[in-house]
Length: 520
Image (cartoon, rainbow, N blue to C red; front, top):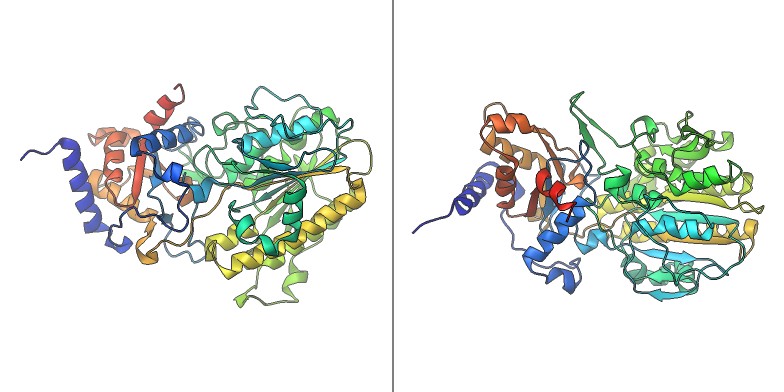
């Protein structure tokens, strides 16, 4: 009997995995889970899916920022960091539970109501807002406003509110519809897009918010991972160090309106991480001829709102509003300790605290009270934090979703009071979804440290420095020292073949494969 070189490599890699990383559990067949994707995706031939996922990575490939190996876990499996109780569920994959997202638009006199089945992506959000404002789009915006969405309104809305419900899957709004009166009303009286999907990889916060804000593909706007690796310093780097928008390579919808309105429009961006808040705030006053926008980001360590004073401004009444007033009154949420900023973020109480500040800014910055349209953009991250810790089917997620729906109702009421019933538009979407519990929880979770270990065991057992960085499971990207790997007599394709033999990896792509796919 003869065996091919590739088959031999797969066999060796599989044996190596079980010899060195058995803590990850035995191999599991690729069985559908309750969170499996729609049949047309799940039943596609493997080669079709491999090409589709390669194209998704190509849309987010940026030389110098992207990793050298890109991974797709098998459907239903989760890649994690070990020993982190806050993150037991992790998104980032191309499966439906991670890429099916809601997209809803509501605005009396401005938005037609109904269910629309045309495919839409994150890149369509900024062009929709631009069309509402009669604002020319830039060449970097590859998205388009659906032609059937907008009415023939003579005047633009006085205010546009964009709410990004971090980590919210589309099916949440059917499963919990009876407990979500605000969302149910917006959906019934607005436009609901049933085919909204993330069409790039990885499916995560920083890439999603930058795509929503710019209307551009990640390979154009340059935000392609939550964490990148800087070979000059030998250290990982977030996309927005010190809340600077410098790495954002395309203009955002807030940038365009900032310039067009010559700083007269109120532009407010609020969120809980720089990954989400900075792209929505845009470049602010750090853009030539633009003015500082309001950027309020919650800092869990400080327990309050912060900003980057170089590009943005933070109203004094928000800066002085700390989370201490919430923490002093309460100590548990659904039986879970809430003792500091980090645990507060993982409770429905934070959403109330956040909306207190948001409504205050809407009222005190006079949003919607003159003829110059104002923009309010908010990232609501509590669903994401709760989903990461307790999962999408948990009582905690259902409670957090009810709290969010109630607080969104407060924002809508504030806008209606300021701008009138037909003077504002609300757009709701999500940056990504989240996976459900694996069928066999102890066998469906795998750790990135073991992936690093198996690469070094196979290719670099002595020096163990081939992997430069692989620290954020949601990125699904491994940074490799290509020169060192070549000196060892191997290439990226060897690593990809080795990883594809692991029982929980659907596909592994090399940087060269992804770069080549861009031109196809």
